[in-house]
View (cartoon, rainbow, N blue to C red):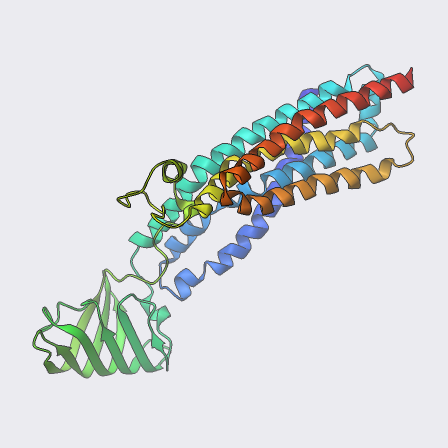
Length: 378
């Protein structure tokens, strides 16, 4: 019986979770296209970055998917009179409630593992992927008649660009000695290049071919030196886009975040750990990872109230909406309150204690309801 329940519940859970994850991941994947279009990263970087964000998405939807799957399973068994047959055959409802509670504990452990260990690792790896990748599609970042500064330390202006990639009237400003291999530019600063024509060619690496132009640079004596050229090639390697490459808080390991809260970061050795300002965001992120999963068992007990009311109850059809609403509101409140839980240790303690106190209270109320239900049957 329990194997049958588990298979049906798992099937509904996977379908709901896959549906939500697919929708959100598709929307995010469209937004991530800026990595190729605006920042010039390779398509392989974009695909890997998008896929590495998948664990974060389905972790977010585990509680809601479990809530919907549990309600769907109970309603389906009830509509097919399977529950009535089980009650008639002598199955104790509290055993089925305990079964749902055990499944919720398994999901709690899974979400704890995902949120505290797996997600930060994958997200940090995705950020490292952006940081270590070269700009392979720099031509895509260059728009005509505007100053293009997607590359860190490099500003490019192009008046016209043909379909074959040929550019006309090019202005380049190099503030980080990206083209330091040019003649007379080894020790120069503020390199400026003008060219009438140019084109980006991809061989083993990207090269910018410029024709009929002039290179101006400022030496250590604040003197401007000019060099004219008929044709020159600039190697486009080691370019860094302005994409955020520093790991965010949600991309930082739980170990470092805990160290940030418990230790003094006097030497700034802990990533994403503020030295002087308050650490509200750090504490909120930890509560999201370790506190949110605790609300899953509470949800399973709330939905279990659907098993209490018998077939002849005239309000039976309303109960499924009532308990779904209560459980859903619980998830919404847990998501909202976790943002404020980092304001103080008292708020954090309250956030953790809320489900731990409510779970035994709701369980006792379920036992009380079942007891009176059995008395009425007698």
